[in-house]
Image 1 (cartoon, rainbow, N blue to C red):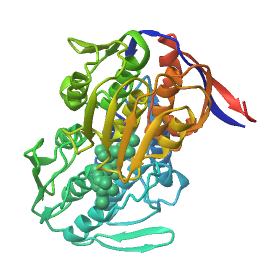
Image 2: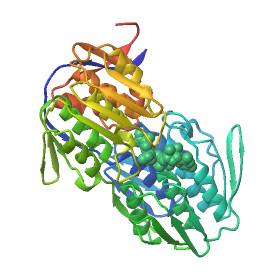
Image 3: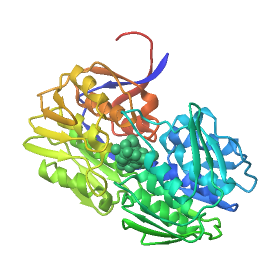
Length: 422
Ligand code: EPU
């Protein structure tokens, strides 16, 4: 038996949705909170399985972590070294943030490789090169990594291209280096900027936050703090696309508009009916039409994490769209499923050619990754008839309370147990 979603498509949604805290920021904040022996309080932490896995890792390290109403209180005053061999390490991508944090605390670490959604190769060579440059010696075996960090010295790190994870891991390790580290071509995603602001709030000396050249001075004594997570811009984008797909009027609350500029640019080009009301985004159903070429890119470009939800929206209607995936060139597991529903999408190398069809039909579809799963939810909300979306465990990695939020918008969606064919 597998928990899945049963969706009866074709309903017009209406109402308000509250956006949860950012997944990709909180999964960096939680490990980084271990850098101080004081209590750290993190607000606006979403209840998603990535967070549950991180909390389990904290508890294994003898850290007290209490979660209540979105507030996570972390007390690592009694933290103890442990090889990070637990299965949770392989359940999410962001477990690699423990590498730099644990090296700062214990100068040594044996750890399993990070996991996360599988859409082709997701190397961490940039993280490892930065660690090596700062003085870490590591080896890789079938079971994972062994890291040793005896003499860490500030350096100049030049990333060949932008990486969220490598920027954060290099910046965190630089806090424990003697002297100054400069990181060139640092990632500009809001999650990176906010993580650096969190480190600063703990007492770290970091200059040029929000730019691609970061300067970090090692050796500061970090203290506790209270920090609030930002709204999840990918959840905003997902609900905005749900609104454009099938809502009479959907008010998305708690949006940082600056974080979704690239999405709104596409909404403008597609003439999607939306309005901004202070910090809320209001979206109404708009049948996609016109011709457009879109490419995913590092921030402030159009995010790869919305490529799959956008594909689902565009698959039904009259639009002819070329959508090029330039960050993860194999992030296309959703395409076979959308085709099962009647979508007309061709994949050439890393480019989708989407030709809108008049309608999609409900069926049983499989989500294989977080955003691919979300894209299938969108397609099933649009489709005629009943659908089952399997792979709910992937969706639960990153979408806080998705069933409740969609039910509140009057979607016909419910949890079900999958046993046999429909
Ligand atoms: N890359 C390398 N080597 C590295 C690191 C990255 O080749 O050492 C490549 C990647 O394969 C990719 C590109 O560089 O082609 C950018 O990857 P990045 O390192 O920025 O990705 P990440 O830090 O592993 C985070 C998010 C992803 C999001 C990407 C891009 C977290 C935990 N994950 O991943 O989120 O897609 O940035 O914005 O922050 C998701 O939320 O569904 C998700 C996958």
